[in-house]
Amino acid sequence: MASHPARNGLLRGWCEVTRAEFALCIREKYLLNDSLDEALRFETYDALFHTGAKLIEYFESHDEIMISVSGGSDSDCIIHLVCTYFPEYLDKCHFCFVNTGLEYQATKDHLTYIEERYGIEIKRLRGKSVVWTVRKYGFPILSKYKAQLIGKYVKGVPHAYKWIFEEKVTSFNAMRFTDPQKDLARYLKENGINVSAKCCDVSKKEPLFAYIKEHNIDLSCTGERKAEGGQRALAHKSCFEEGNHGIDKYMPLWWWPDSVKGVFKATEGIRYSDCYEVYGMRRTGCVGCPFNLNVADDLQAMIEYEPRLFKACMSVFGQSYELMDRFHCRRKKCLPESFQLSFGFTEEGGI
Image 1 (tube, one colour):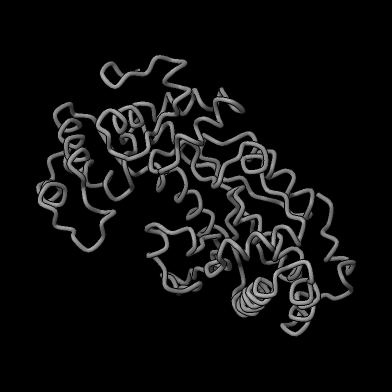
Image 2 (cartoon, rainbow, N blue to C red):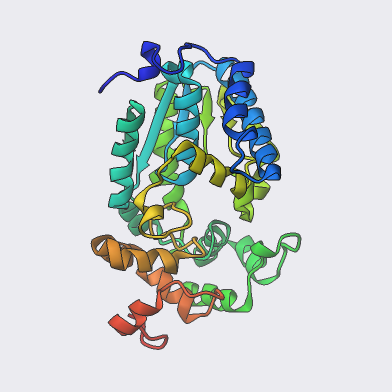
């Protein structure tokens, strides 16, 4: 692979960027940018300056840094930020992508594009495939929290019944089971259908943990943002967390709103994966994941752009989609309307 231009001293003429140099650079590009609304200029400049200052602090104080690459827009922004403004840290950075066995071709192509654009290597990690995990432990359904409880309930764990049917959780609405979801849980138990949330841990996290151990990683860097909302937004209080066993976690974009991210993309000329640019997806994650509230939109895009991947998702997760729709567990169905019309899906008869 070609060496990165920054390592040859060709990028802006410096080897190490200080906070002052970074502030000067983004001041010219953002704060003095007349094409931007004045309030947006200040918001973006402020967000970028504080991100850069924190990045320097945490990257300086750690020796081996793993940057998780998903092929999504947030990790794109982190990669661009590091490679463009802080290339002096590239020698201690490990860019890692986990292939779960179900991946968009657009994502695979985008990883190659990133490598060529920035002159980096992205490690492709692979553990047990999602297909293997689902067949062994059961399919995911509703949400990670609810799938774990239903899985225990199906297996007869006493306390799971209480948490599902006696509404022990009252502080967070998203954790409560609606009446249709309770009916679904009963159906799964009566029919001995295994449900699990282990595909995330087994197929995605375990390969990362193995890499972290093998390469003595002491800082894990991810693209999580508070603005994404949901349970993830409640899971962290800061962009940096001291971890167990000497592995800290840093989320550079944690405080970035969508407005800042949009300005950064446009100003820096970042190109996202075709999942965004062509397919029209708003987010990418584990392909076809039933936990995704907008999975119908993703499946619709797959029908049009990656039909083979759509068939694979139906083979792995189809029963989960069908059951959630049959029991009306969500306001928005899992299966797209075009699929129902084209392939004859019915609530009564299934697929």
